[in-house]
Length: 456
Image 1: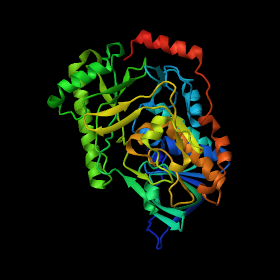
Image 2: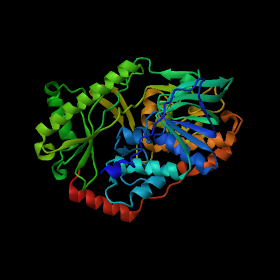
Image 3: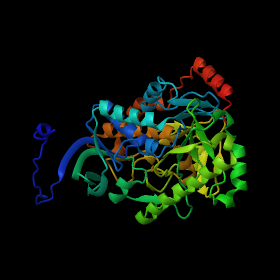
Image 4: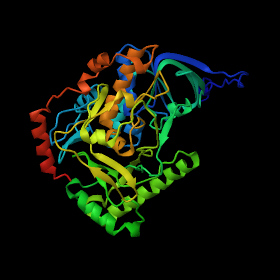
């Protein structure tokens, strides 16, 4: 033992923060702020275009809400109908292909009105990290956006604070995929906030050790939640439970939480959201013991946020345009997802569309009116409350990210407001026009498994 101790390193050195600003300078072609579905898609698309890309996120890990809030489902990826064709490609096509290679990583639930893909958040997180790593994208994680340096209509650079030191990031073009329009806001460009209506978020919870074939229907869960709301101090009276067959795991969407932009209130809401989720789990264990009696919480997601602040774009997408399926010349994304407006604590508005319906997201609602090298993607694009509720899901968000990258690539050192729209249309054609049917064998197999397991 004494001989081994002689080889233990004991050297240390004294350090002191050096004088000066000690800012690390980084430059790239396209900087993407936010690493969720829209931001990851934008970064991967820009890398495919041969651009030098830096991807920034405030969390110490990649994936944004897509992974870390455990949303649980890819929504808006498919046309209406039980087996509608796929709407979004690019990153969406790659991740579905790769995750489907391993059993029980994803599950396509067909119907009653559309195909929704349930996913394992751990598998999706690792896929995202590996896709970003293999693409050679530089990442800056745990980074708080402190200041945006603007020259006229162009963002010149952004200042970031990390626990490892400050960074100044300079890029030719920027994607605001922050969710809260953080980059647009700090740049001093015009933004929008709700004039008074609250849009609630959700604290997701993953339960393990459930008994799948004893899972109650959604209607039955809603009935029990309504009857016991006072007993368990519940805000929301309906529930959605996502179960990948064969795993004994359910992702629960049962809560409504406030999503303020003030830091103290936001932190308080996060704690209250988890307490609310615990009460929901207690209800399930007590009222449905045959399914949830032996279940336990495997994970609490980060706060799930639907809408807070968004940009003022060159165009605001309206509910009428969504309902009418207006097809814009500069469309970069499409979906048929219902109006899903969580604007009251007990439930939400749910308005579906016919099977042949499609609505579109134009680039003009992603481009701040007073900025030339900035494109928003994801839930902070310009749309009215109801319209945004139908396009902020992950399918069209992935398409928006790809559209943003292509718009900035075409703009170069010029303005995103003056790009060749015909060139953009050719680049995003798959996400606007491609109509490959889902595999018949795949559809039959999924339906068979669904029926055998009697999933809700």
